[in-house]
Length: 74
Image (cartoon, rainbow, N blue to C red; front, side, top):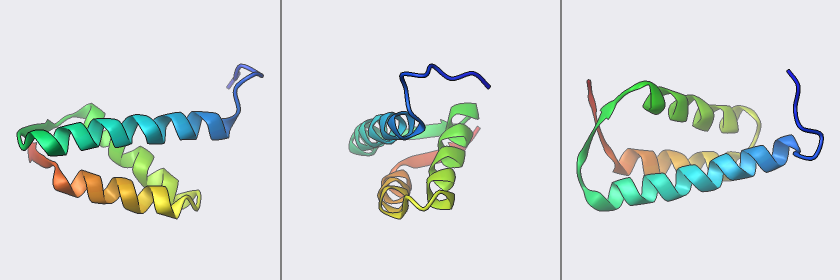
């Protein structure tokens, strides 16, 4: 894998965490139902990866936000 030498892995992780926080807060606030799709699976995998990497505060915060959203099977 080739990464742009100007971007660190930690910057990529920070960006994803900020993006997921914003998206999940917006989704939880709308109180609508959302279908579990490929993007949902990717988000769950990314959140679980944070836990695996030891980013536990971000993992718990995003997991809590995810639990406030109403996802249904597609």
